[in-house]
Image (tube, rainbow over all chains, first blue to last red; front, side, top):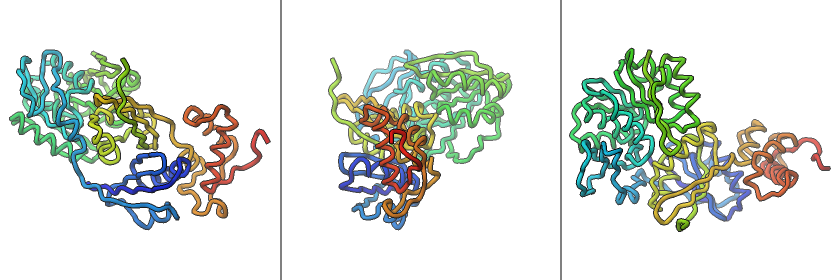
Length: 270
Length: 146
């Protein structure tokens, strides 16, 4: 999606603060501040020139269209491969390295979550390492680059279904499935509040506390009896509320791992 | 040895909703920072303030790593919420569009104390009250020190 960048010049910090309050209320999503100017960003379909003029009053502003593009390109061009516990190497196409782990995943992340660099991806993969996934059905909630779905397939999952609410992530996941010759993974965009009606043996949910709490009843319903749900994207401080909410839905905590203040919680459906 | 700083980025983005679209994408991507790493950390640390505009200052180092500090919502945003007024006044000197009390000003001043360059609560309250008037809000009653 294209964005509109509005630059308002010659305003001090106090004026910037008031404009931030008013523009955010009008749908502007984010701001960059400097000593004497403010840049405000809004998606193109929501941009309203008349409303902007009303808010900015006499202040001089300029607008520019920012086309959709991969902003992560600079970082992506030279990132280091990741080795998760002598278990799986996650690398990009351009890495020419000797792989010494039993598994290898090739990822071009673009602007999706899941490069293996983040502690939560590593924690979920380490939890998967100790699970019996062969022949199981897997649901990957918030698939991002598809890295966990691909890991599940490589561990022998019978089928994997991944969803993401972000169009860019779905496109990227599909590209990564191709790079890894995946044949048993399906990925779809899902912007609804409803998870699939099917039940799965294993659910991978590396998202965040808010989304996990919101979807907890559905996550429990989507899991077969004795099935496993791995939840991450969580900080250590999130453990109690997630465990209590999951418990109320019949999901019993049986394992917990921590890395750099991030955690993965493993639940079994009673 | 301390890492060498390559620059600072001052953003205001919504809690729990950071994504690689502008402004985060262009602001961090051009510095070679892993945008998704920032988004994941920022979103996890702001789960209690989802949808609220939060100032965040990033320190970017020459090795492309980064640290960031999240501040409390801007006083102007908090004032608009308390005054239950979606917009400030177009002519704040003539047209008053809402009211806040000194107790509310004090509440915001205490919340913003760490972010404002103020040594006393009194001066922080004066600053918040000034912001309120600039937006066309009346501060009801008499200042506690008057």
